[in-house]
Length: 385
Image (tube, rainbow, N blue to C red; front, side, top):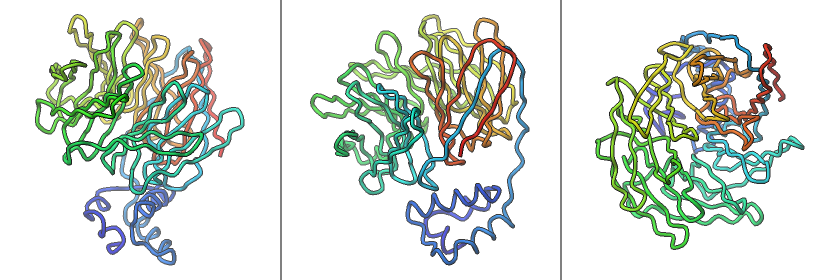
């Protein structure tokens, strides 16, 4: 274990972790996918050692809150073991995509035939965020290789747009601003950027707060990007032309917003990962409100989206992880357990009509569909392997 794991990172990343056998098996395959020197004939030895000495760490039990919405959760295992599926994307043709960060692939799933196709990317790209253009091309951030990529699914060709600054090593969350521009965050480098698709030019600016870790990003109805700072208790907006950044301080100093979603009225909702809260920021009035997440202060709210005025997010540290529904009109929550356990839902998207959500369960090597069926008191969970 020391030879295989310590070759790439501190052993503290192992000793501070804790998983069951299935989870450790997935973690080991993730590491092998990115070059860990673990011979196949030693795999079971290392796996058994990790299972015996580093069992699952205590996590809060999921709190299942009943309600009137009817949700069905269905999951599929992605083809490559240890992929660490990250961000899902709903494409114009109805297919669902995901970034297989540790397998260095983009995956496409056809919900009608329930079949997968994976596209191999340039070596050590580490795909992270994912968006689609109107022509069906898949744009992704190469989190390990400092570029933004465009995959043409028809040809398999990848076009790379490298970062112009070597410090911008980890582009993170991309979002389209019309057909010709992509804005994106660069978490570890503490930057945000803008890619001009006509010229290929990338411009970068540094966040005013040191080590603020720009993370999730949205764009409002006026074309102004907003991003949350996972390393600070702040939300920030960007002037789309000058790239000037304006920060807004959240009420609690310990807040660490991680992902963000925006409603049709330009009100922002964010997942306060560190405190276990759902937050609301009115971009027009500056008013801020927050609610404790049902799973409690250690629930670690993460992936979030808004569909038909309803806020949906996942609690990533409850056992099992949950899907949470929040109605802004009634300020009431409802929750469902993710059948596989979740394994951390880092991001989620909704279909254009709001009838379903798509999630990627990183630690469980799955993607999932959350079907929203209306106002009936029932809960149905199914898993398809």
